[in-house]
Length: 372
Ligand SMILES: Nc1ncnc2c1ncn2[C@@H]1O[C@H](COP(=O)(O)OP(=O)(O)O)[C@@H](O)[C@H]1O
Ligand SMILES: [Mg+2]
Image 1 (spheres, protein in one colour):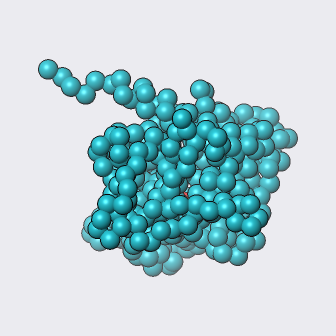
Image 2: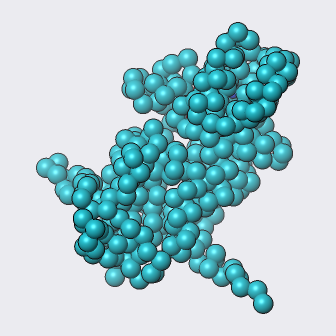
Image 3: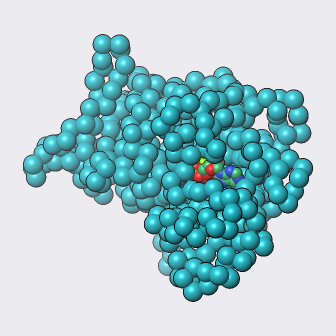
């Protein structure tokens, strides 16, 4: 019998539309002889709807949202999804494996993973703790720098700390971080709440702007004219790190506009500099795998780096930038493209992710939760 895989997509985040394209790309590439697909769409206002799929004229599958059909989750393991139509139960179904594909807030931060944990079913990707750690830029940087992974110098503070000590914090930033620097809301993605600060004068306004998105702010040293490098990490029986790729943002930095709006950013696979410098290639591979393990990731992650000099360190070096646990999964996204370059097609990647989720679930199920 085919296993029933449920792709969860959409969501309340700014990456809502990308998530729909990512979900359709999984739908089109999943091995339908092995897996039966079910969809749950999360609307921008947080409602869960049934998503069915249809094939169009160009033989592509597409999720269709059934706005009238709402989804309820049930702890009954044999009927864990209840489809409601106008307050009437329309049908019940059993999902074997969940595949969260909601990028950013609500999906990549451990919230959906927590829900699936309570349903006691396997799900693709990182667990609750790892997801929330990777989504939090401050926690990521603190954890990794404690393990001697090179990241740019940083400080962080809360809204109250800023209110009480604004001038002391500003002095510390000028002394320890210097300008240019980056101000970031601690727990967003897509470059929302990320600002490049050129001098002390710009700092106050941008800190204020970042506080609109988050209770905590990270300020970090800038890598000057950085080369932006990405590595896909996939957990099969062992952890695989792809050959790196490079992004050429169309803006001064890889802003929201450069990522999603103007369509002018380009990529380079493989990353040429690393192809010519074996030590850099090795550093990228080893660091990506190490970071995946330190942050307790499962299944997949895209590990991002910046290569270049800083005001303090003139010699160009590799700096760990961030880890994305539900990276873009469209057919032109970096995550699958880098793995394609390793000879792994999307169909195979999806299969590996599902198998890896099942293996993790089996292991977790053996952990004792009773103690007399
Ligand atoms: N320390 C830095 N030095 C230079 N550029 C940076 C630095 N931090 C962030 N950036 C730029 O800002 C972009 C977004 O920052 P990032 O931390 O990756 O946030 P997000 O999670 O929103 O993608 C990066 O892709 C890069 O272009
Ligand atoms: Mg980023």
